[in-house]
Image 1 (tube, rainbow, N blue to C red):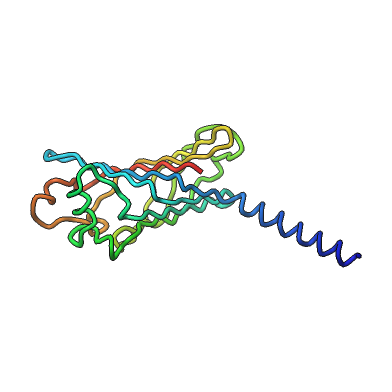
Image 2 (image 1 turned 60 degrees about the vertical axis):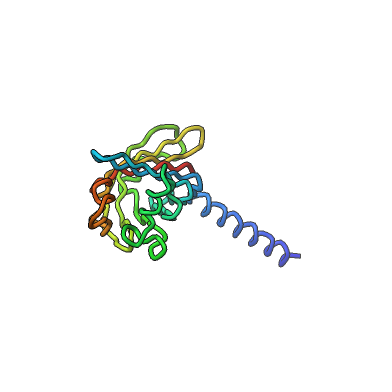
Length: 184
C-alpha cells in the first residue's frame, strides 16, 4: 500500500514538473515573416506563414525556423528567381534560422498586460551563412496571449545573396526590410 501511494505521488510530481517546464516555453505556429524590397524598377514583397518560433520565458532563449520555399510572391517569376540556385538556392538551404536570446528579459512581465520593448541577440543563418545579429523587438501581453513583433533591415550581401547580372540584379534592393509577427 505504501509503495503504491509513493509511486502515485512520484508520478504526480513528475507530471507537475513536466507541465511547469513546458509551460515556460512558448511556441508559435502562427508566425508571419514578410520581406519588402523597393527599387526604382519595382517593389517586391513576399510573405511566409509557415515559420515556427519559440520563446523560453525563464531564460529568454528565442528560436525561429523559416522554411524558405514557403515565401509567397505576387508574381510566379519572382518566386522562381528567389528559390533559384542563382539567388537563394532553397533546395540546398531550405531553412533560415535564428537562435538567440532576449538580452533584457527582466523588462518583460509575461503575466501582466503591456508592451515591452526588448533587444534580441543571436545568430541568424540564411543561405548557409551565419552572422551575429542584434535587433529590437516588442513583446506584447494581452489577456494572457503573448506576441512578438520586430522590423529590421537585412543586407543581402551579408548572406551571399545577390544576382550578379541581368534584370533581377537591378530589380531587388541590396537591403530589404524584414517584418516578423509571432503569436504564442
